[in-house]
Each structure stands twice: as structure tokens, then as C-alpha cells.
Image (cartoon, rainbow, N blue to C red; front, side):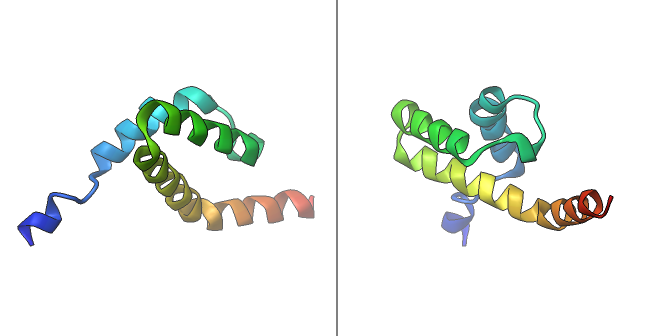
Length: 83
């Protein structure tokens, strides 16, 4: 148990990773304005600079973050389509 616990990612580590690698590259824009190609370029850059493991971990963070936002995004899209 102790050995496995040391491998878990903390909220602080996730936040630091997003601040260091993602937010600076994508800027302060709405999620809807970010294109898949931008994410691919970002992950390629992370792969080149920090290695493939960090690129994979960053992708996992992005996917989990967006998956958590999916209900909010769906409501937002429905409201804008209804107008």
C-alpha cells in the first residue's frame, strides 16, 4: 500500500504540471477556441522537451479535466443553440 501510494499524482502536482506545460502554451482562452491540432503540437513539444512519459501524463490530465467539464459544456452548447 505504501509503495503504491507514492506513485499517486497529487492535486498540487497536477496543478503545477498544467501551469508549467499547458496554460502558458494555450493561454487564457475558452476551451471551445482550442483546436485539437494545438493540443497535438503542445504534446509533441512536451515530448521533445520532457519526454514521452510526461507527454502521456499531460494528455491524461487534459482528458480528465475536459471529461469533468463535459456536463457543463453540454449545457452551455444547448443554451447557445436554443438562442
